[in-house]
Length: 289
Image (cartoon, rainbow, N blue to C red; front, top):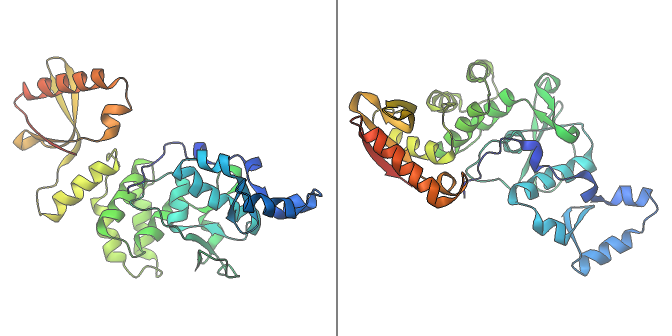
């Protein structure tokens, strides 16, 4: 399942008061026995050891919010002597992911201590130089460091392209990532990472477009242009992907195109009219889901 990007990552953060932290409850004079009884009775769920949430509230959260809640719960119980990194940081930055990894990733200098369950710990020299503070005080690696770290990890070419496209679409500067990759000695797959960065494009507007470009690249077809402008008699129109020299366009359809931009019937009508306008200019159109 592809997890789409979210343009406002802060909108997916959970309100701090919804996280019931055992240590904080104890400091306020509350009995922890009541919390554990709530878990047994199904009124509360355990997010991480020592952090609870009302079951009804948890069930109302989206999968994106639930994953963010796991990160917030870890932060509430482990302080700030680390940075969320790799795919955990990518999630907090709002980037699209092919699969949301259940493990959390943290980095620091020295490598964060302890052995918390479900957490991968990484050594990041001079961590302070790669740190940023997100909403609610969540510490994370910068967008440049995050993308470099992710591309250096074992990842399928499709997963890497979806993530890199999304990162660049959100404004991550590709040249700074390239400079970091070319000067680091921490990346064992630097050539692979640079190849993905060369293919990535900030104009990719969705994981579906990244998937289509991945297939085109894999089959050795000419590289398409993205968001191709087609002047028509009824105004400017754009194609998702295209080969202008061939007057061939590829439209990547998906649920969002038809269900998230107004009444479906009207959207379908407008899409069909746009298609007619483009074809009237001599273009041939292909579609893929």
